[in-house]
Amino acid sequence: MSKHHPPKLSDTDLTKRLAKAAYFEQLGELQAKLARIQQAFLFHELKGVLVFEGWDAAGKGGTIRRMSAVLDPRNFKVWPIGAPRQFHLERHYLTRFWERLPPRGGISVFDRSWYGRVLVERVENLTAKRHWRRAYDEINEFERLLVEDGTRVIKFFLHITPEVQLERFEERLRDPMKRWKLSYEDFRNRDKWDIYVPAIEEMFERTSTVRAPWYIIPANDKKHQRIEVLTTIADRLSDGVSLDPIELDAKVLHAASEHFEDFADIVSTTIARSE
Image (cartoon, rainbow, N blue to C red; front, side, top):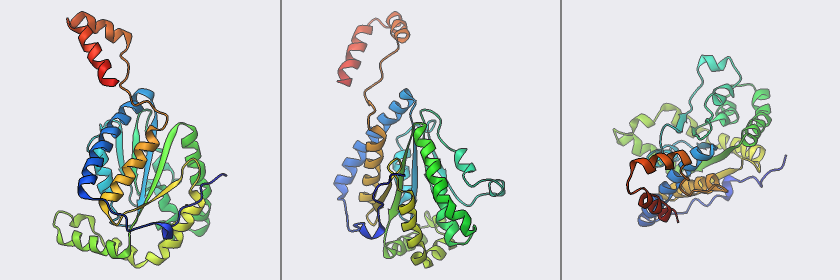
């Protein structure tokens, strides 16, 4: 299988920052582009899958909310993935992800994903070694099927330092509106940081492919992280896709001409806006 040169946590520049003014300017532009992309996906019946992995408190939820704020929820679905329930424990671990894939015209976001098999399940000994070892090939095949079926798969790992993570844990602890985000498991996972690192690196090595590469995003600065993620999403989803307004169907044009006296002016204005 052809692969990208797999990214490494140690190669990530965590010092990147973005000024507040530049952040809001770029955020507005990217959100407008994402809205156009969603319309294009609906018209062309395309599909997108966005995978978010990363350290606890790295900013997955905040980035996803910046997309959710401008996209139509009828065709944009966010799936927060936690521990599987008994129904899925009795079935192949990919079952619950097959069920949540987007329809034609849809975009699905996975906040955590099938990579839990080779991360938390591996580190916490929740599945036998023979199972998580074969999961790399299963995941690559799963993603191959998605891509060959016309789904664009984009995978992010949000990377922060242990020091920044602890600062964000304290912020959550002190803020009554954010305390729900903090759990005992967050601290337990933090204690296993050095065990997670080789698991993450092997995940990149084994599953960063040409069709579905991994993007490690520096996330110590939330503003920089959000813009880098949204830029990558916009670039990947719009690649080769026209974002121009759709052309009206002939039947719609005919019906409109019978109901609007200024029909010609409406059409010419629409054309002018798209140029």
